[in-house]
Length: 189
Image 1: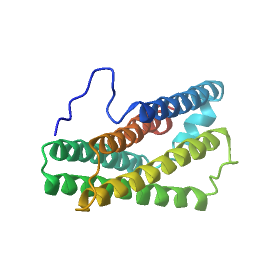
Image 2: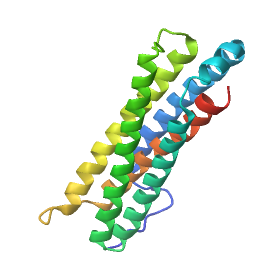
Image 3: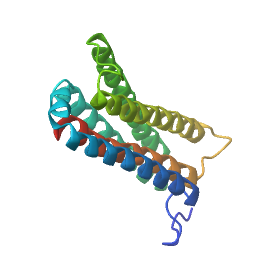
Image 4: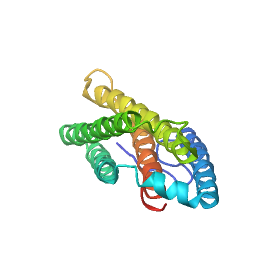
């Protein structure tokens, strides 16, 4: 199987990259708005940021980065036609993503119990919108990885390498977005 492509053809195909660029632009604009309002209300944003659970945020960062590594290893082994190892790594990647969602849900529960809902102040409006939108992306990424994993497992149908690359690209986008959100929300204010 020849999985090499031209430099003009990105991994996963052009459509997934259009989606990724649109998502990065959307999150980027929201992060810029967060930074602007944070500079206008420094004390409020600082005090609100202190109410976030940095331990959970850090563990979630490690979970997403590790799962991104596992996706990359899964791609490597799929490309090498080692399906058993590819599935092993994709399953571990999904476990990391699921762990992220569980911890994030616990953090959301903590915030709601403390009364830190979206209307609490402008910082928490950004927090809920940005992390909620990211949560949905991780959930979608998990569904995509699950579909790809089942597709690989099926003997009668083969998952295309392009589909697997597209899935990995989407998953890595989720990692990248979290790497932008975590320091801005949890550490900088």
